Image 1 (tube, one colour):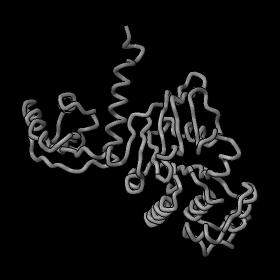
Image 2 (tube, rainbow, N blue to C red; image 1 turned 120 degrees about the horizontal axis):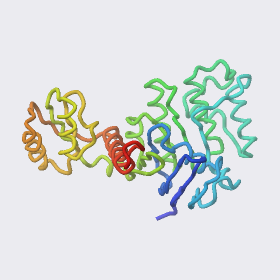
Image 3 (cartoon, helix red, strand yellow; image 1 turned 90 degrees about the vertical axis):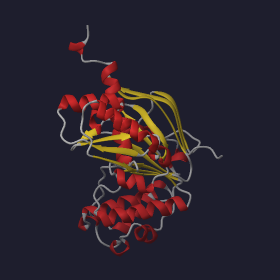
Image 4 (spheres, rainbow, N blue to C red; image 1 turned 45 degrees about the vertical axis):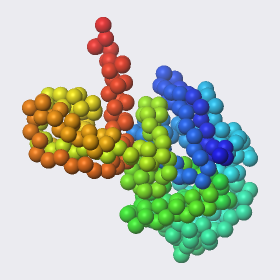
Length: 313
């Protein structure tokens, strides 16, 4: 097996008293689309800034394309689209891409890049006349200047309509077919589920789940319709079933199961709690299901391990 495109081992970073990363370890294989997920403030942006050389790591080991983040040889082989970016409005799309090519010291094909992201007809228009979605596509083209081996994309579909998101998804698939590695930050979990090979979930600076998409989604969900429950009933049911409180919503308990044969036992547990069971269905777990489950479980465990100050003896 070839060396990882990205390797992090026990990476830690603090900003004063705030722990941004707390022992992060992960690997990204070359030629894959890697989804990096987490709630706001979980540490995603800090790790991306470390990987791109914008922020120095504090502790741990980080390797990107076999070198250290920030090294010129590594930077020339990577592309980056930040979530918030601004381009000079007086340049045309073609001029902007040529300008970034000169900055990076790499050849650039503006026409090919603009065609790739679906705005080839707007190359001679000034950026100030672009819609927000067109500027997002231009940002993606900018990240691909120089045909990098690795590209970091932070919310690349945030300003796009459904058709635009579909176009970007197609672009990511084509990049993977060309052997490029894509490190993708996105809150649109349905998009991540459709395009990513591997996923890592970070919460409170800690990786709480990672693996291939099949590994994260291999457990189906049992959806048990129990009707309206009081908060104590919902809490008791969640505790007995071993799921976070968020597993109960709109009259339905959602419980991951290892195999379909476990469903009767779950139903018996609910009945033993004197709760009604109106319907039971088994459905494939979505990435959103997996994300909510691992984050809520981690947050619940953290809250138990670290009670509020007033609750401490």
